Image 1 (cartoon, rainbow, N blue to C red):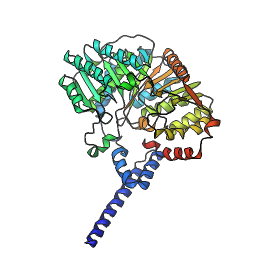
Image 2: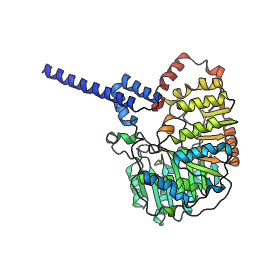
Image 3: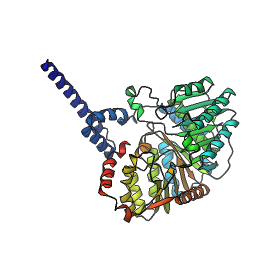
Length: 473
């Protein structure tokens, strides 16, 4: 009997070693960013059992797999615009042509002209405007949110979706089932019964059998109403965003051609969730030109060839002439972004980063703090909001470029998740976003280099250890 047990133990040990070694070889041969590779190797070597499970669920790189039909992707990203837009009138300042061309090349994102843009910082205003626009919908409502809670705010929006569907408006809704795992399935069943078409992008009903999907979360927040009014930004559908006075966020209400960009990306996500379209042009109706605003709607995720939003962020940082003001709830910069920020600071650019004193993810805070000292030393100014959670994902640069969207300045948003940002080339919008940043600074304390370096060795050690795993967060 003892012999049998020893044989079984030996077999299990051999299988275990083969799995560990095999997984390490897979990680090495994927040729990822060396920092991310090292992080995975550390997990696999020092916590092997947990590491195997964690890698199997969260670590596999499916970017090169065909997650959406490439022909269909190109059709939606290109053909829908070619018959509707003329870019001859686009007049982006010459200094930013490289950024425009980059976003055209890596994401097929054309210049969209003449949109009316409302920058929203109040959750109360956002949901009032959204419900008002939904009430007026005559043809369709397309909605996609990372978080859509079964709370008071979620129920109100849900009831409006169901009401409009019962009136004959075409209502389509995409949600992330991992982020909303606590929401009962009855919640969505009631929507379907009322005529709302419901889908989940990269659905993982059985996580252990669908591990290649669970790592890629749909972090987008998009609404399109009748093809010419759209919403995009950082706000989800939940009480935190609508009524919590300690939550600070940023969202855009867009009228005009900017809604076309949101529409195209919703259509791709709808197709990727297993649904189809019959008449795509119906969803791009003629619209008015309201202003001189120029914008590009840009996405990033596992079915894009490049890390589009990371590339755009690095490009903007390196081409800034005067200042860069950033807001993000989580600051875990990739190596390329970290180097770009240092270069900008050392070049004399006024680089300011605003974060919360404490985020809603305490394990991320030490990793974020580990980047402060080097950036402060190079000249960056870091501001921590005293009592509000900064959930906004924004950038304003040189009184001309404004970026508002769903993408955090962390590894997961920049390299992994489904994200969407709006890039605006507009002095008026930039002035507004700069003023919002200045207003938020009134509630912040600046992190001073001379004081920061006095923190205890234990804090430094904790930060250094947690930072090793930042690429996996």
